Amino acid sequence: MKKIEAIVRASKFEDVKEALANEEIYFFTFYEVKGYGHQKGKSRSYRGTIYDVGYIARIKLELLLSETFVDAAIKAIQTAAHTGDKGDGLIYVSSLEKTVNIRSGKTGSDAINS
Image (tube, rainbow, N blue to C red; front, top):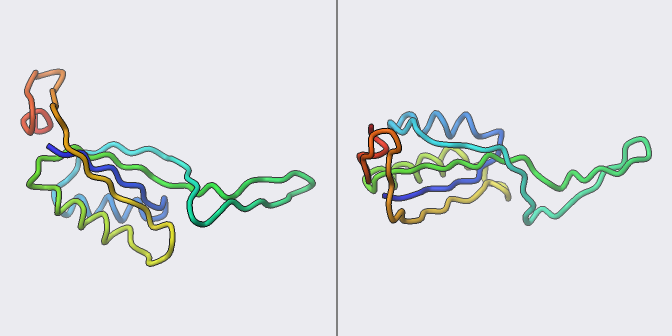
């Protein structure tokens, strides 16, 4: 079992979701997040108030997959999220020691397929 975490531009989320569906990957969790990276922080002034616009809206996806789906998921995310500009995002892959489905008690790959 592997856990994939991907941080992508919010504007590319629907493309990533569709690309994952094309690989028959329908189950994932996502969060709206903000980040600060190589683009550096920028401030804008509006009516005397300074607003920090350096934080860029991103979507963080978390996928739990059996190892057979990992390469397809990475390729789908990378292809769909790519613009060629700085800030396209990152993909992290880590191993899961144990996965347990609360309802069924199944473990490993069976836990996410039940």
